[in-house]
Amino acid sequence: MTSSWYTKEENPMRMAIWHAGNTISNIISGFLAAGILHNMDGIANLHAWQWFFLIEGAASILMAIAAFFLLPNWPTNTKWLTPEESEMAQYRVCLSSGGKDEGIGGTWDGLKAACRDPFTW
Image (tube, rainbow, N blue to C red):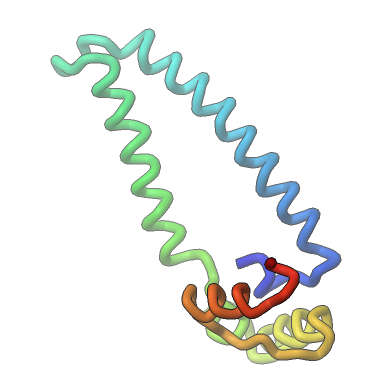
């Protein structure tokens, strides 16, 4: 996902932000779990662990649905970019990859390319 939007120079910082966000979410999730398990036992005739699964499961499902509709795919088919912005995003990534347009491939295309690449082995 990030390699379709960011250059090779920008990617390490984006990945660092991603991993930092993951760590922060684990901390927040721990505090949320402690609060739910300590304070919600017996509400609406449910045990605290049941509330824990309901709340965290519902939040995960809502975020997945929102991400499905809001996260962009590729610069070529993102709705909220103007044609000029889309072209510039494609140009930046193409320039970063040495002028090769890697194109849009699926999971199997990526697996085949990785198996053919000597650096993988």
